[in-house]
Amino acid sequence: FSLEYLRTHRIPTPVTIPRQSLQLFADCSVALLSCLNSSSFSPDEAWALRSLFTSLPLLLLRCNERLQWHAKRHIISRRCDEFMSGAWQDLWRQLQSDVTRSQSLRPRPYPPPS
Image 1: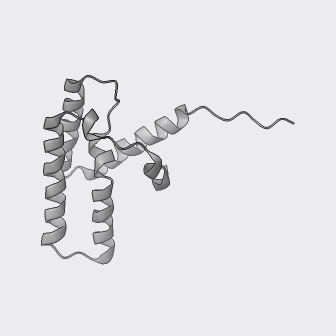
Image 2: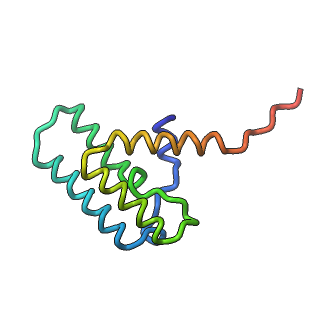
């Protein structure tokens, strides 16, 4: 798993996300920004929280685009609830698992001719 892969991972767009889920995502974003603005953190802690903020769309909004709207809403709602309850590490582990799985499913290039 590499952070570099996250930069190339497709970020969900509002068109593919149910409106109620976008509101939950906004609530999570505001909560994290409020936390960043209201407390003093060491430079390392502040960097980690800013990194968490930039990866929030992937942590909370990623869904298979072929899913029905109600299924997406359920998945995103569950993730937002986990985020608000402080289960950030669990969400990160789920993302790592999804990324690892998607990397293993990618077609491998043919070996060079000998």
